[in-house]
Image 1 (cartoon, rainbow, N blue to C red):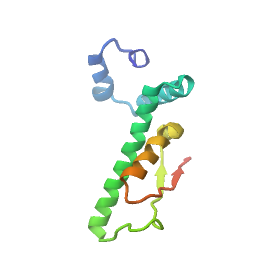
Image 2 (cartoon, rainbow, N blue to C red):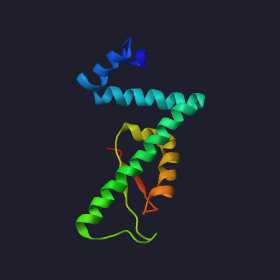
Image 3 (tube, rainbow, N blue to C red):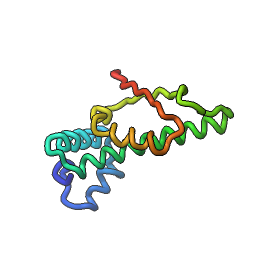
Image 4 (cartoon, rainbow, N blue to C red):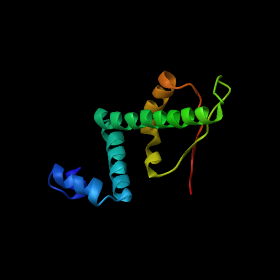
Length: 121
């Protein structure tokens, strides 16, 4: 991580992630992590991506709860589903994100089907 961002210590990383934040640099680092996870089968790296998949479902569930609260509509059966549009380079790592996404859907979501669409624009 230090090498990728050209820093020498953790304090310098604060500059990268806060003061001089560049989304494209973070995306570039994510790509390096994904490539390394696939190449080495590194369980720590894979767990990072699986955790991200779980967080996506939690975010979607939060949006659905607000929708339900504001509209009074509920998702009450397996016939109902939500389309999720995935945009951004991070979704080039979908193969690594998907296991955590599916685990979280199975364990902690009223909606059991989330068709995903990856935008290519």
